[in-house]
Amino acid sequence: TQRGQERKSQLMAFAAQRNALPAALWLVFLGNFWWIVAYDTKYAMVDRDDDILVGVKSTAILFGRHDRLIVAILQLLCLLALYLAGLAFGLGSYYMLSLGVSAALFGYQQYLIRGRERDACFKAFVHNNWVGMAIFAGIVLHYGS
Image 1 (cartoon, rainbow, N blue to C red):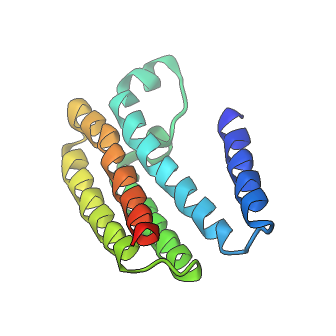
Image 2 (cartoon, rainbow, N blue to C red):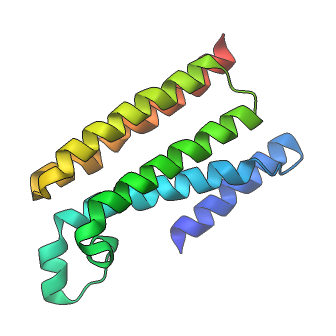
Image 3 (cartoon, rainbow, N blue to C red):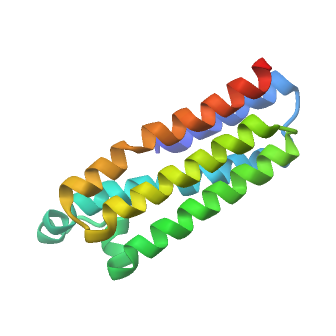
């Protein structure tokens, strides 16, 4: 798939820059993978009723009534993997603070999807831009200070 090719390209770019592919990089990969599945599920929650009618498969349908719980588990796994990656790569307090901010943002997303309402689930999906910005800011601040 296109996403799979993009991930391979990112790994190759990292390896080319560092002249190595450290084992801890797989933590970054897993953290991103779990984050993608979590936010993609929130998007699928928006269209769940329509998808059922037309026979489209999605993680929101697969997870059923456990969708919110599984999204929360995926978000926690994402944060854990990114935390461990941060330790492995020696990222400091700015990065760790960014993960704390991301955890709070994930908590807000859980609040938004609590009723499984379309507009709120879409808002939670779009809200992931802030998570990405928080993590990016933590990395930039670590290397900029």
